[in-house]
Length: 277
Image 1: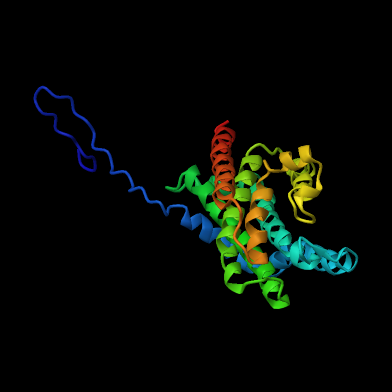
Image 2: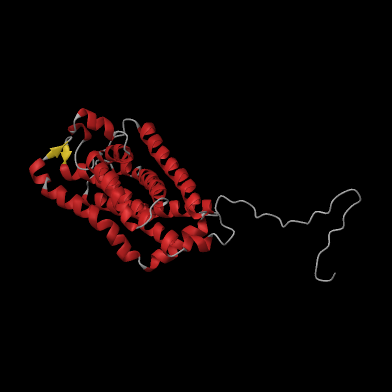
């Protein structure tokens, strides 16, 4: 018949319809998702950056100058210098967390952006990888802004050492982006995120060494704090600000990578289960 393709069967063999070639796999298939988020973010870049920076900057400058007058030195440095590294890690964590919770939840559940993307050749893996790297990119901007403040105010011992903070910022953002995607996968609404902040983020900020050394805590609480990802991010960042190498960088990096990988993989599985209901 005209307009139809016919497959001529060979003697002794069943006719099999020709199947179209599958698209070639690429490790960069997530990039359009990242680009889409970037194009949307550009329209509100100013308020977005201001919102991510206001809170950590107020903590660093307000507490650093305010409490610093009464505390003097902490671990042999001015309190503002001590606080700078903790604020850096805190800012990166906040940026990645908010992006993978509120913004990603809006794209997944409210705006149905993910559904639209999944009607293209992209897969759920590509969508979540795009979200992961986009949140990491936004957290890098937040970290760079705090790092710029550290440089301008001279809150460092060795400028060259502070350049190693750049990979620390990326790794920290990746970690909390992965954890955020895991929670996003099970959140029924925006209010659910309050549990995450109240039960996990806030206690972690108070116990991980942002505002004071962890050895000021009771021994059992200090030991428990070693299992928190923010503790390991600060364990990498603070020595670099103060001009010396971290004591256990491989351990710190390994813990952060483990949290990032576990969060992303669990989030991927839970998100797939949720979207296929």
